[in-house]
Length: 166
Ligand SMILES: [Zn+2]
Image (cartoon, rainbow, N blue to C red; front, side, top):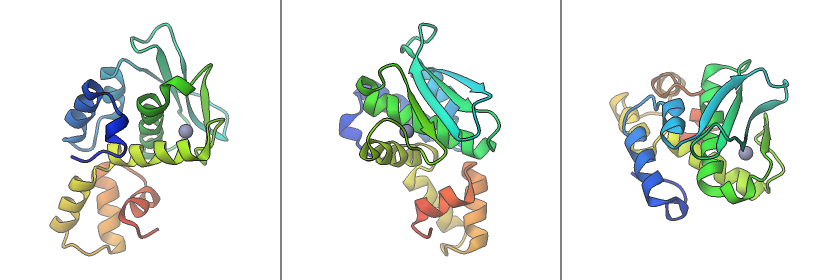
């Protein structure tokens, strides 16, 4: 299993991620819990997809809030994105990182791109996507992409990005 920025993820946490990404659709909420993060589905403002902020209730010291009004597939990606911030950028979280619907925040755009790449590897593990695509005949047809999105419980646009056809 190849994870983006694997060399920057702590070994014990990489092991947990590897265990959860071996079975799909990946249980992102449980993955967060296993990492010691608290996840709350919250009524966030319309232009906010999610955030990660310090929390004394969470073993790892941070909680993720995800906008409960967005599509479940979108919420899954957002949770993975916030997990990625924890794995890669926890020293930069400070009083909190709030992600817009474009996954922009007070962090640099480089860090946002990193979080998106790692999130994609969490919810759409490349090896599993390619194996499932082969099983569907190997062609990146609209129908195959829709089936893959359904198998991995992600949005069709997210799967298109993963497959490089967006
Ligand atoms: Zn972000």
